[in-house]
Length: 341
Ligand SMILES: NC(=O)c1ccc[n+]([C@@H]2O[C@H](COP(=O)([O-])OP(=O)(O)OC[C@H]3O[C@@H](n4cnc5c(N)ncnc54)[C@H](OP(=O)(O)O)[C@@H]3O)[C@@H](O)[C@H]2O)c1
Image 1 (cartoon, rainbow, N blue to C red):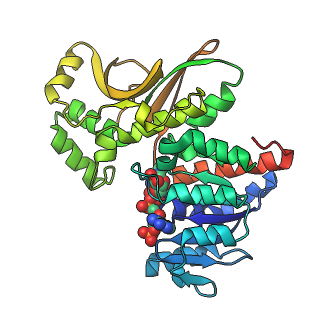
Image 2 (image 1 turned 90 degrees about the vertical axis):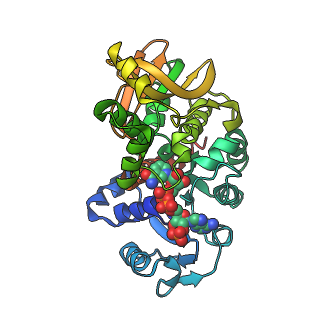
């Protein structure tokens, strides 16, 4: 399987690390023989139709800051769209930064991938939050697969659990702790009595929160995940504008301590239960959703299986790269069975 990787930051580099790691030679047992033929970052690309030397490209990126100076195949200045259109490959892996204003550059990358007949695996929530129904239609029209397991739950197989393990059942509602950063902040406030600002500063020091943390603390990131789950699992054709969301920016320590006195705790919960929303919500402290720290948890209530909760790390380079691998194997499986969906 020939792969074009666009975006070579934390997730992209973790993917090439995993692919170049010898422990994973068992992937060949699945008939999966990945060959990365192009990697693109903001300054250009490294291209080799025979397959890039992934250890070498990783070393070049770390030492020089860009893949475009890769020896024998570095192309400074070339843009992602030109690479996607001109380089032959079966799969585009899209890992550029999330942009919820217009979805770019991910949205154009994904559309160009479809139009040039490539299956797409993305970890980028922006294009999906803005245009999920339209992107699915475009993928169908071009007879290619779109997969995005890493967008919800990082490496935790939240989407696959709902789609595959609960196959045949009817999922009536979904509730989830969908953002590790805000869960960490709320846990620190509750457990250690820190103010919101103190807990946020600590999250930044530990690398859990971005310099501009608004995607997380204003509830935008979990709202994007609600859009993805509502479309993919519940068949709702919605976009980000259909989700009501409220973050934790104004949450007071007193609100948390009052809840504690009543045996409850306050979590930022994303829900698809009639309407789609994200808001700080009181939960019983023994509710399985009440995970602490940076963990994510998602509870499905289905017609026959009842309540099922899946818990795991919601982010991280290697964790998210593992979701990309699963998606690529799924596409490989579909290709082998000619079951394009
Ligand atoms: N990190 C996680 O734990 C995690 C978990 C789940 C989902 N995600 C999502 O996965 C995506 C990637 O995350 P990340 O942490 O790897 O981000 P990152 O470290 O910021 O990397 C982004 C990469 O995209 C490249 N890029 C930006 N604009 C580009 C353009 N116009 N053309 C080509 N390349 C471009 C950057 O190039 P330069 O290297 O030249 O700057 C960089 O290599 C994001 O959408 C994120 O929300 C991340």
